[in-house]
Length: 294
Image 1 (cartoon, rainbow, N blue to C red):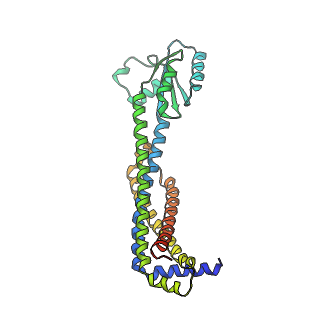
Image 2 (cartoon, rainbow, N blue to C red):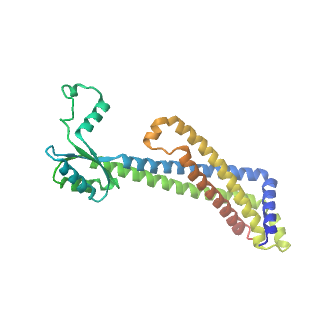
Image 3 (cartoon, rainbow, N blue to C red):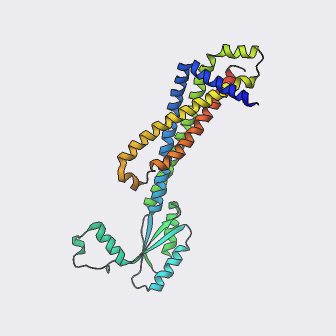
């Protein structure tokens, strides 16, 4: 297809949008609302995955060592822990360091009266897992290592956390898909009405011998332009709302693991543009082909 033909198609597309101003505005507003809801759910989905990932990294399994171990024995236990499947990282915490952390966390309490070192505590290892769902298996393997006096019993808490996080992820992804399908229906029905109002124009073009694709292209480009405009408006709305929510959450949002404005802006913008262009093109193509029998 020649370049000047595309110039004509773009010119006709802009002309159609301007000529059918009210219908074009109604289509953009309706589509923007659908894409906005999709983008909002996508932002929630991305944050659910980010928070889940952060909690998984921060969730550590603690093992406490027997008191009579030599340094070589402690190092040997560390190597055995590293060899256990689904163990990502380990960190040795001496009794002295544990005592300092305890004092920082609880301050000078009556519990520490007469105690000025970590002699009452045990050396330990903090273990980060590759996947929290394997916590029970890892705990069982840890109990079989000679020199480990105790393994923190967090299996129930971890299992509940994994279950809840997976349900949240499935729920948010499902809602995103449903909203995307609703947006498809919205744009298809709205463009149907827009094209139906111009059926005489299309019939005239058919009468003078215009090919099917020559008639389709201006409407497809019009749909792409409407989809692009709707995506931009939706992104501005989502970014403004997200900016308010992140500002209100403050430091607590960072601790929880919420994505920053810069981290979420690009994936949301790219996703909304892709969805907007797809819906605009798909809605125009289906409407012209099915309802006007071009």
